[in-house]
Amino acid sequence: MDKLYTKKIAAIIGMQWGDEGKGKLVDILTEKYDIVARATGGANAGHTIYHEGKKIIFHLIPSGMMHKDKICVIGNGVVVHIPTLIEELNTLKEFGIKAADRLYISDRAHIVFDYHKIIDGLQEERKGEASVGTTKRGIGPAYTDKISRIGIRIGELNNFESFSKRFMENVRLARIMYGNFEYDENRELDYLKSITPEILPLIINTQQYLNDAHKKGKSILLEGANGTMLDIDHGTYPFATSSNASIGGIISGSGLAPQINPIIGILKAYTTRVGSGPFPTELNDEIGKYLREKGGEYGSTTGRPRRCGWFDAVIAKWTAMINGITEINLTKLDVLSGLEKIRIAVSYELDGKKLDSLPYAANDFARITPVYIEMDGWKEDISGAHKFQDLPKAAQKYVEKIEELTETPIKYIGTGTKPEDLIIIS
Image 1 (cartoon, rainbow, N blue to C red):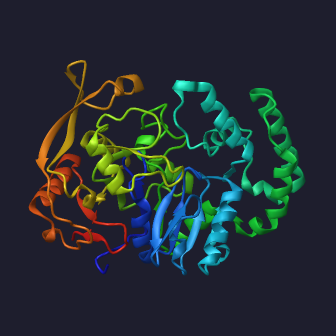
Image 2 (tube, one colour):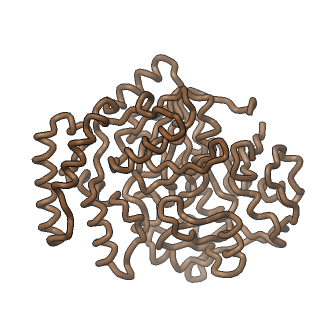
Image 3 (tube, rainbow, N blue to C red):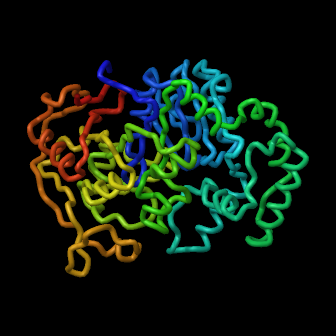
């Protein structure tokens, strides 16, 4: 790991539909940074790391918390479900980690309440076949309240009397909109009151904190959530998340001005997606099943089986452009071992015409025909490989082709689930 390097502020961003393997690289790079921060999304994200042989999934707390001398920050762009936060803090205690000593939460981060989760489910149910396949974690309704300017921020816990009045008013408004759904608001309010003394010491102005730390020379690693193709502006809208999962969201959700370098994009060596929405390279055949089972492609948040398909270079080039990606971490290359032939989508056609860029309309996206190139696969097991030259020639050519198509250098190649299963290219 001596080849790893740091600059003052770096970002790690998913370049597909999430689940690219961001957590592993965050865990690896954290040792070179002073602060690790989340800036967008909520408990709909699931970042998986392996610590001392045990699998740990973080939904809210930055993955860097497993490193005992690092400060972790939940930024203003995150929406926080407090019971999930407490659950993660308790899990960390089981590992002997007192996260509360090193965790700061933005006073401007909005709260996800349990009634948001209920509304999320009701919305999906009412949409029927038009549902977008949310995680039903209440993320969308919480962001809706935020944009509607009725959302409640976690800093408001500091005045619980005022907080309570605002909370009850929002529940009243929710019942007007969605009917008298089954929900005990008094029970949730009592819980929040009981847990507030534990939460208040963590709440600070994180924008000021991060900027002050940067001025003092502290290095910051910004941990992206979800993936750019789920971004509310740049993704496959409306089959998207409710926040900006791209570099713009990271800048806004951390309060740091645009001064980020490197911007590391995470790409899986094939493509996956959870939930509804267009997926041009999806494989509904034995190869798709092979990728799902060998890659363990089941959602870390919901447990839902992920849809699997060939690598989509059109999407990868798009998200590299949107984010200003400076280098790529290609993950799960080992999963492709054993395939005789491997395909890459290099362009799209719609109604017989070649497209120059991604269509904006979801119904057009769903009718796209991918144009593929086919490459030789490899039989060798590359799990745990540490040097690029140790890869089979076919695997090397596959990596080089992705680098060529995305017009972005590949710096890291994942060859397994463990932190050490990584090739670092100088």
